[in-house]
Length: 547
Image (cartoon, rainbow, N blue to C red):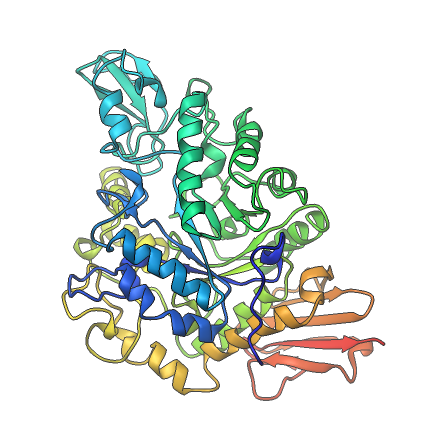
């Protein structure tokens, strides 16, 4: 199919789009440093154009000490030197536009680095005008203001003896949370966003945006009472160009909140990243490290609710992978004997839904989780969790099992370009080990194989632009209690889509709807779809059109 380039000056272009999340540190190194860089991204824009994506979500490239891999920004309007220069960034924006690809900048408007000039000034004196840009509480060195815990472990409060106060941080101590109640801070952040709009970006991915209205004295960290006021402020002050797109990461979102975040009037955000489906294989009331098997009927019910309750009144993101999550083919697929089939199956299920799909780098190749010894992991969260859990008495073996299954570094191993040394990622020593299976799983092999996962994604991306049913069709779940099959329909007045996916390594029976006899097969991950007895990890889409 010929690639369709979307007009990114028009409101709502993202409803037909497919985005590609790119983790710069792991994408391509051009200097031999072992760390990816902006020129590495430039060198693979043709690859992304071939895939057919419409925009790149660029994980943080702003100046940063890299305590949390760039999510600790020390200058919102400067490029991290290890990634390159602002001239490189300008060239990346321009060259991407030539290929019909927009750039989304990832901004942490909830917190910054403790090396940011605002925070350095803030901790110098209670009277400094920047002091109120952050959340401070009085206290003594041995008594934090509350027992609130950081996401990465330990107290959410850090003491500064020079001024006799504690500051609040939802994440690492090096990531102080900012005080959105201060209107001067809000204006500073609007100006940051305007800086990047002037640079020509297509929009923003806003990190943990549902935390900006926190009230730590009330133990409120998400969905604070002024959240929607603050989001409207961003929209009114920055998003004056109707083509700009914003996606907000909202771990605390439910469908009612998502309707407000992503209302069609554009008063807040374009779309929401919500994570309800991602938590279904986590033990209720416990952490992500406490795993239970995925129950397919629960996943189907969750996605049904989001599909039906946001229909016509909100817009969702569609994803299984990102830089914080393990590889989905290892998590919910079969990364061994059915790796290709299950990777295609998962894509089929997701891309038939309403919303904007996000590919995480390497997902289009079927990249898998990695198993490393503890000392080779780089992620702060992994090391903090290992320390806490072993100190409480968990066996090192059980903790490592959790890390291998859920650790964020699973997603951050270098992109697998070739079967050669370091997967073609670097001529130096990679910052994180390359997965040994790169000799089989790599972009060069995928591009040479017309039946690869890559070309399957390429076809799904093209279909979403060709057929209005993907954007506009109403969702109906079929066989909701079936423990193997995820089947559903999407319907408009003139187009009817049937999607059937086997989530298991066993054959499954399917009662094929009579009204789809004679329908056209759009995609299938087996050479010929089997419509009655569905083979292991089999998936297909059928379309029936009416005059």
